[in-house]
Length: 196
Image 1 (cartoon, one colour):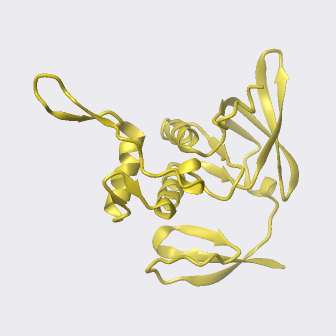
Image 2 (spheres, rainbow, N blue to C red; image 1 turned 60 degrees about the vertical axis):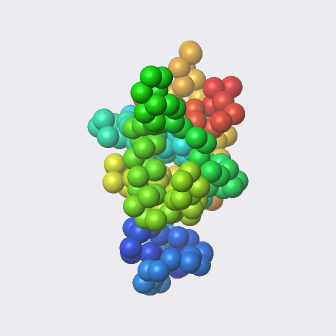
Image 3 (cartoon, rainbow, N blue to C red; image 1 turned 180 degrees about the vertical axis):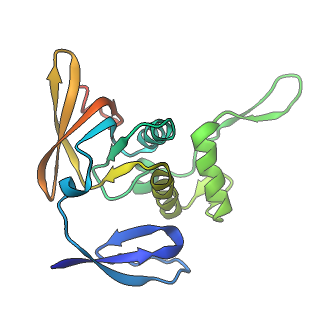
């Protein structure tokens, strides 16, 4: 039996459980066969990032763009962390005035500036206030473009170590307990869950 999903073509995303969005986009209902997460995933990654907030997204994106095979594991159903799920808005001021010239200089560059520019292009920001739903879409799109594998609704359970090195982590989700192997791990949980 298939699972019903909502496909939003304009934004290249699939939303389970047919969540209604207030977007001006043609939506169609598609049916996909159910598969266990393990059937869709690599057996071994160069890098596994645990935590899909801003730092986890930046780590995953940078590594994937550098050629690594990356898995990003997030405990809820969306990337972005607190700005997307807990109404942490607006982005804090991230500019300074240079002494002597009074020139305003943006301090946050790189991936953050890229994400902010994408929000502006979508009309989803005003000054530093942003629409968190568009932020979720932009982060998903960037991960897809970079070839990052995403595993949502997966809670970190434990880390397997050999000496002082983490060799795998176990996550819990609807497929049960899944062990994920990687050469390197980034703990972006915000609570150092993997490290401890």
